[in-house]
Image (cartoon, rainbow, N blue to C red; front, side, top):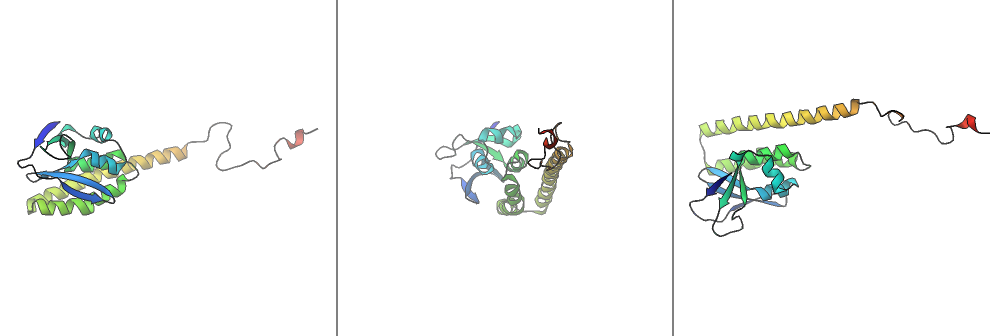
Length: 172
């Protein structure tokens, strides 16, 4: 984890996903997002979010006077990686919002240029491949679970014995 410091101690930028706030700080042409805010959106802990990322995606923001001081921040790629890797109930909607609405808009405001747009597109393709891989693993797990036979001694499927028919011939 590295220490990130800004040239000027300005207030963080605030964005909103549904009713959740995402604070961000800008360093040059890169955006860094408060890990605690991302964890809240994903219904997870900050520690879980940070564990899902590489060291290059994590930093500490050195603000001198605000609510972000000393809190871990994550890079743009770390933001998307966390949304995909954690697979929480809200992560799919959050990932979609990030890739389709939020990041393209933020990138357009931070900087422009054809070469950068091509690099961003390549990054989005890589992220979507990660997402596809994650979905394929989930489908395989569900298929494996449904293909397993029921435990021995248990009825298969939704078969429910009819009351009064079991042991009918054994009554004396």
